[in-house]
Length: 445
Ligand code: GLN
Image (tube, rainbow, N blue to C red; front, side, top):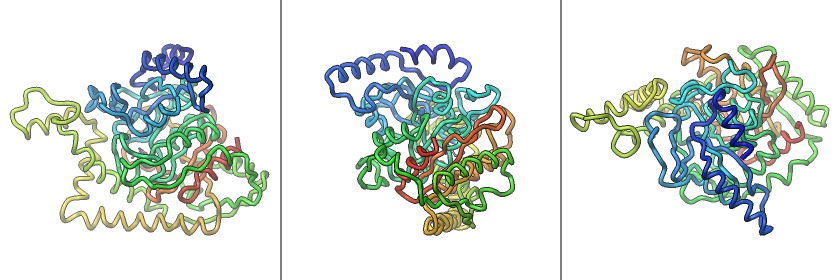
């Protein structure tokens, strides 16, 4: 009730929620109380949280930030939602996001932009901007996000919270509306790494309904938080400290890294030589997969349908023209082009080959060091409305995108401020090293 009251008072200005599920939340809280009264409470019993509106929730509107799904009520729960409910958490609602998770500022939402709680004139980052802002403003202690090219880590950095993108295949994608299926991954956003560890333990785990899920035991993510960092080998990718990095962000990042040295870690420079290909490769692969995934929104089976179609083609055309926003249309066009006969080899296939090289860069670096550190974003949160050119928006993703192409895990932790705007330190590890990343982040916090 306390948090629902805060949402009521503060979210008019922030716009971090698309749907607040007052009644269901109070009923779930009562159920959690009953479990606690019986002495059966687990670590997350009764914990209020919020879900990015990309997760299907049975009986609750699931819009994915799009007019296309404005009237869509999911008939089933995503695996992540099912698991969080089974752990006893209480969802307060669905958070705002860039339409179909395409964006870096939350300005592509059909429901309007989210405001950064630290400075209402700044963006919260995207695409999980609603989740990040809701946690930063103390509307919920935790929220779920998804990360296809940085959408957990970058908004976490812009809003001064902690956000973890797990290894691809660690968390089931079942019931998470697909953007780019080979890159999408769900993860927790919360104040601290300790909180993220509890949440990851709840959402990771076997699910036969996602064929890319990796069947692998779930370690006790909370158990290793306090392990000492002496002997930890940290690599600083040279390419993450070059041109385009805001000097004030660099200063905050280097100061954070010095703290790890004082905790007994050693630091050396490494190279990820194909970094400059990451954005072009991603912005071929992600739109290609999106154009295929979004073909299901045809005005027949899901969501928006135009009035009085003349025939089937007219129904498709107008339903899609009316239901999708500009950025989504731009990506469908790019993706359809790069997948078309005659262009596939030159674009999609080539991008997949480049992706392999980017992955190899990381594997080579992790032969030398345990973790990589650098900024999560080249700048702090920018002003709402300041970045109108799509390509300059894509360039914002320079430090986060290669991680998804490689499938490795990454976490962003708060590392100070530039003026009144937070800066995030990004920590990367090789596949399935989430426990190590959480441990390293926890020691810093
Ligand atoms: N900014 C990137 C994009 O627009 C990443 C988004 C994401 O991770 N969902 O595609």
